[in-house]
Image (cartoon, rainbow, N blue to C red; front, side, top):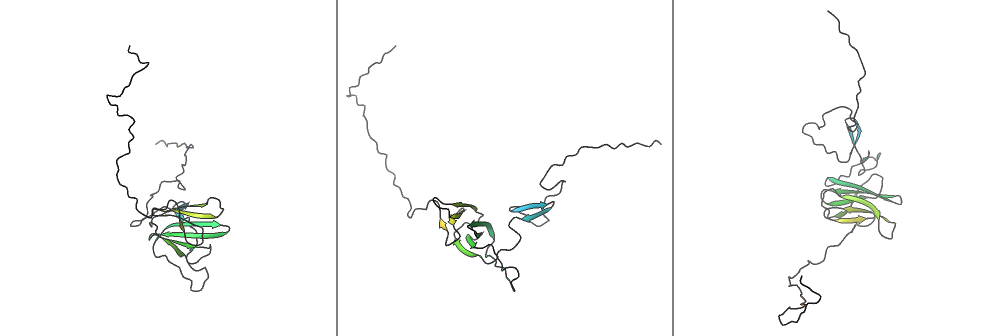
Length: 195
């Protein structure tokens, strides 16, 4: 029986980026689990991490004897940070519509500063106001638009709602009669020709 000869030759194969994955893999969480990729970063193949940092902020400092965590009373829906002139302020929006602040980069307890948000995730922008260099954190939520400078209480921004309900009464429109075009009027036509 004749032996087959195998000739090996190079074959081009291109890898296409699918993030950090170079092969097909099942992209689903384990059974009976739910995975939300918001605010996650892909670190390596089949590996995700949070983009919020590596240490717990709302707890006593590391090394504190009998240190404790300071839990919020509702789940956190949004996190934000304001830094101005070296003074950082961290913010946490909760699902019960409250806003909490911590004026430090160090670990410790947050303080509630506002209620009346929707409890849904909100958007933030750090900017200064007209004719000032003071930085503010502008928070835009479905139920309120507020700004905070890291001290005191947040202030409403935008157009304030009216103190009274706007009531209207339907009136007939005001008409100014130019001419009633009565048959007794004497109109003539000039420079008009019939072809």
